[in-house]
Amino acid sequence: FSVLVVEEHGTAGQPVHCTGILALEAFQEFALPDEAVLNELKTACFYSPSGRKISYATTGVEAVVVDRHRFDQGLCESAQKEGVELWLGNKVTNISIAETHVEIQRFDETSPLRARACILAAGASYGLQRQMGLGLPAVHLNSAQAEMPAAPLEDVELHFGAAVAPQGFAWVVPVRRGAQSHARVGLMCEGNAALYFERFIERVRKPWQLQTDGGIPPRPRILPLAPIRKTYSDRLLVVGDAAGLVKPTTGGGIYYSILSAAIAAEVLSEALLKDRLCDKALREYERQWRSRMGSEFRAQLTLRLLAQRLTDPEIEEVFELARTDGLMPLIRKTATFNHHYEVITALLKYPAVRKILFRRLLS
Image (cartoon, rainbow, N blue to C red; front, side, top):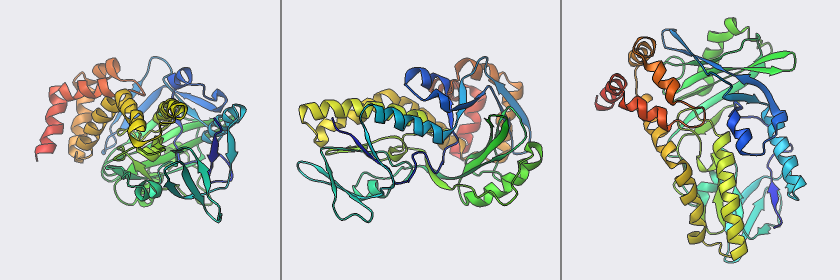
């Protein structure tokens, strides 16, 4: 098949909106550019609203930090080696489905592109999906993030509380660029993400020795936390963040973007060979991703909707359970970076945790 990628920006992978944490197992499952790996992560420190700290360390390396620009560039180079054509600096403004083809209109271009089918991979931007009646993510938060020079610390930090990031959490991720140390600082929250970001910077500036001279503008964006209503139509599939296929617990989207794209490629290839590109035939894509990821999404979204209702005192209760009630061994036994179903199921069955979560639900 002839494949064309139409990219809005002048450089693939820019601007960077992503925290860039990826499970090490993803590099074993897919042919990903390992030259984009900057550093490994083994320990996460969780901070309660009052500042209480709990550390969690994996026995081996489960996650890595990637240079997202270099990562995307590597994917582009791999695709081009396979014959994919890449058009940079072309913003798609409209997609229309005809009986025999798809028409794609670009900004400042009068002649539309024509193709037999289209995969929409536009990230967390939903104008085209709304236009085509595919719906919007039912759950979302606002987010902001920036990378800046920082002290050479090793541990990821996650901060919780209504004053830090209401209904979400804030993070600091250590980044190594050769001999230089940086930190990716960000948060996901309800409300004004830029305002909460400024406050969080002040909270972690001293311990991380953040260098914000000249001002570090955060990159704000909507963070989808649930799939859109429908991820397919005649001659069209929607993948990754554009389909709302991200982890509802953390908002992480790289792995599910790659996985959903792989499923879409398989389904669309077969549909093109059979020349069966109708809505009914392409429904197989959604059936497959729901089969692979549906239980994860349901479990994670359940926990997300329960946890974001917790008050600060209730979050403190959960931290106390983790510190004193044997909760950490359960988490160590069931948690993995990419797959949360088992640990969430175990937590929801844990009497003390269930009591806190469902007390809030019923209040």
